[in-house]
Length: 275
Image (cartoon, rainbow, N blue to C red):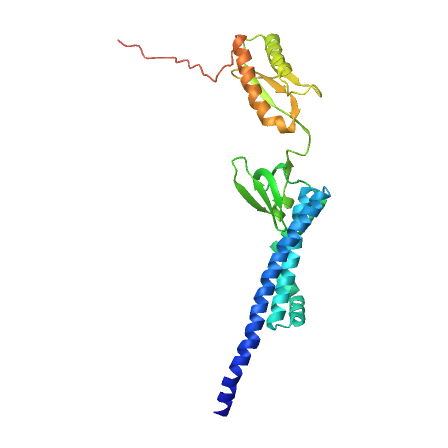
C-alpha cells in the first residue's frame, strides 16, 4: 500500500519530466525537418549561383536534405532517452544485414553517384533508357524522374538507368533526319531529286553544313525509294521532320510526280466455261 501511494505521488513528477521530454523531442524533430528543407534550398541556390550543372545540383541538394534529416532523427531519439551511442553501435553491427536487405537501394544510390560523376544524361536531356523515354526532370538519390511527351511523370530506379543502354538524343547539338520517299517507277528520277532538293534548300532550319543527302536507295515492289537526310539543330528535329514531309508531298504533287500506294495485280486463270 505504501509503495502504491509512493508511486501515485511520483506520477505528477513523471508526467512533467517525460512529458516535457516528449514535447521537446517532437519540437526537435520538426525543427530538424524544417532545417533539412532549408539545407536543400540553400544548397540548390548556392550551387545554381555558381552555375553548377543542374544534375549535380539536384543530387547534392537531396543528399544534404537526407543528412540533416537523419541527424534530426538521432537528436530526437536522444531527447526521448534512447542511448544514441548504443544506437549507432547497433546500427554499425547490423550494417551487413541492412546492406543485404537494402542492396537494391544501395545499388540505386551508387548508380546515382555514378550518374552525377560520369553524366550520361543531364536535367533537360531527352533520353531513352530502361525501356522508357522522356525528358530528364530530376536525378535524386535513388531514382531518376522523367517527363514524357504527353506530360506523364515516370520514376525509374537509378540502377535500371545505369545498368542498361542510355540513348541521349540531346547530347549532340546537331541531328540528322532520315526520311524515305517513294515515288512511282514512271517518275523522272532527276526531276524527283531536283524537287526534293529545292524543298530542303528553301527550308530555313535545314543546315547548310554538313549538307544533306538525296539518293536512290531501293527499287521496291511498288516504288523507287529515295533516302533524304538533312541535318538540323537538335531542338528543331521534330518540327522540321513534320514540315519536310508535308512540303515534299506538296512539291511532288505540284510536279505531277506520283507517290504510289501498295497494290497487287491478281490474274485468274482457268475459269469454268458456262454452258
